[in-house]
Image 1 (cartoon, rainbow, N blue to C red):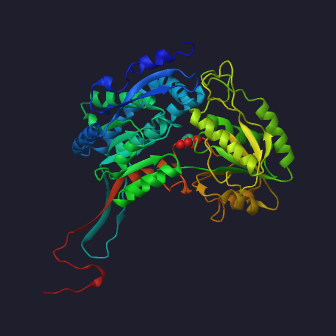
Image 2: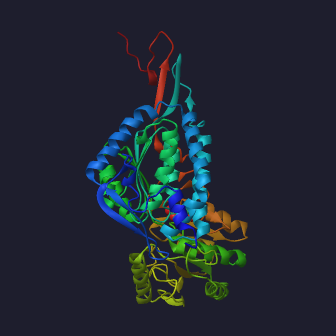
Length: 513
Ligand code: UN1
């Protein structure tokens, strides 16, 4: 156990045989089909967990409904105190949980730690927020009247999350929802159930220590069918879903049918514009980290590089050199830059995308391929690849969750580059690299990038928790994490109070008896 995985698993309280039902508690719905989680790093079985059934899902929802009745009455700053304690537990468990994230998901150890750091950061943010759930007060048009608004908790928040940020996205949602007074039921990706169990245990320990009901945090592991239960459930007023656009459309449709609320964080097709005024040293690092970090499996991954023709050849040469220096291998070893894809299905999708791009006439700049031999036994390691393409290629318009970077040339001015950047169905993250103020401001203007995130002189990925995270168009329009994203987890109530002995009507309407 070179990397201390067995120790991490033990310290996180996961029993190897059956991580879920061993707790014997209702907050992890079990009883269903057993899901075995294999590490894409070495192909070994990490642990197995029972998935939820319709009946145990029902138990968790019942527990959640019951817990909401008391949790909503706990003053928000006291709810914040509970989140502070969860943040402390995460600090204590950062190394173990970060390692398990790296091992189960396949991202580099540094990125695994980074993900747990994001969780700690959002806890701190939520603690402060718990004293700042502000509503506005308005001036009434009627004499002797006061008007204001307040924010109330909504109830059960259903969270559907993806494998690529198996723990951070849960925390973005839960920590905010909990200070807002909601209770949460989480359906993690069935590809990363063990890290989910670890998170649930950390949170449950804190709730239990404070004599709070277990239903504040529920876990329902399973495939899309569990997601459907949440989406169709009128007892779940808000469903927050992160994943593919295909999944998001299904969730949105089901939730919309019952006029519930959904918060969607779906696919991206993120581009960096590299202008002739860019610092190319910065450009190379931004592009390479953005394209190969997390093996191209972030929703903010840089998929397209839109480069001015005057520096196109130089960028191509420098990218090729940088890619030749990338070390691909076990993500737990800190000498490697690139880990595996999540599973063999992802490898297949990567290979199909390469076939497609070649069929459409893409030119290979750095060739891809699946790695085999010692250290690559899991069959999930692939070579990051670069192709020179047209933005209009079908495959370029599509998000492939893999380290494939598309190089696109532009000539003319920044407006041409912006048109290319916006010329895809997705609208999550975007960036321009330029030292020219006019170009940067045009990119950020209302006629500039159409994405939810637009950066200058940094790449497309690696957002901080303090900003609202999400995007437009097929990305789904939701915003999570910082800024005022908390408002999505509460219901707004407008209150008008008459402290006069008369009843004047609004709009000057007369009604005398
Ligand atoms: C995601 O890929 O779902 O901006 C989230 C980033 C991370 C979050 C990505 N903070 O890259």
